[in-house]
Image (cartoon, rainbow, N blue to C red; front, side):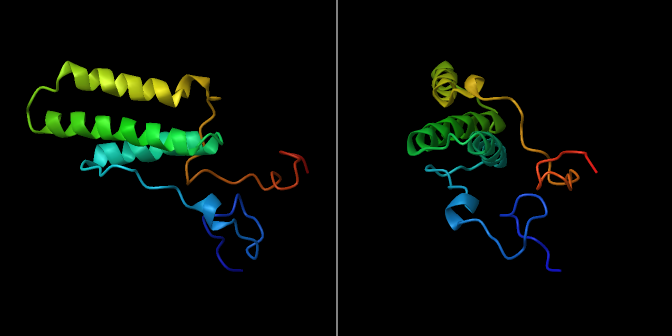
Length: 126
């Protein structure tokens, strides 16, 4: 049996694939220079994506947040002191994301075991 692709949820049918628009996570609108900013963009973006709230406006807010985060990280690694206005911009961009309104369950790690009954809707029953 072929290995299921990342587009499938759980151990689904290998012949059924998700539409490419549901698989591809959009890149940041601004160039990110630090790995920490890329990781922050990916983790925060996946949280919004999993909640089903990634719209064009939310993507712009997420990109602005990641850009501010990147700027602060880059300046900090160079040994300089970031301006207070950068932190204010970061907080404004984070407030636009409305992360407090999300339900808190975060997607399971990649190495987490798959519930074999989740496909049928009967969790942990035999």
